[in-house]
Picture 1: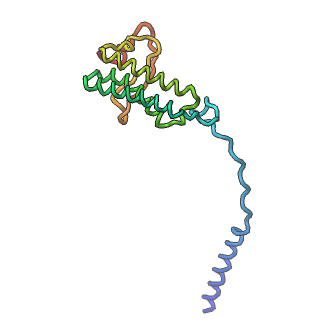
Picture 2: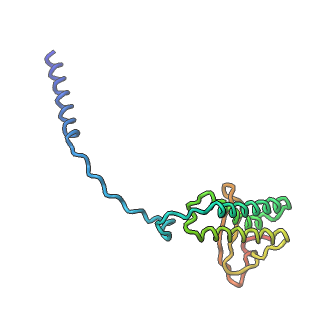
Picture 3: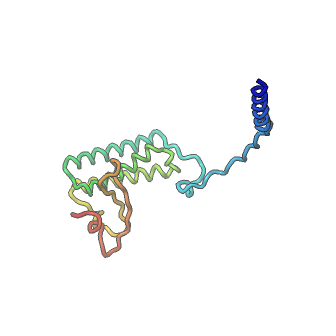
Length: 174
């Protein structure tokens, strides 16, 4: 019985001796606030809050998204070339993503840029409806979409073609 009491006392004393230092420690001082991280996607933008487009600006963008979406559906029903259609769809996807993530409107000019992107997509859709695709013979910087879609989305690219070649030779097999 004495061994049991001694063993219990040793256990209680060791437990208390381990508990006292843990309780008696002073809490760590609060760390100073970290400066904001310089992330790659924020490096070139001011730390100002993003621009909030007005309801009229949002409606204007949505209207053009609707127009371009309708033209793309029409082109699909006419069985337009998938490679050329991706070159039109990429503009629609860009605007949809911009509207899905409104914090990407860094400044007021971003609204005009989004509308310009949609106008370019509408222009290409109209050209494709007429059976033309002048961007495939263009030299210099060419923005294009390519398929097959990755996760249901167009893959985008911008390539610089020297004057000795055209986009059609490298992009499309037609």
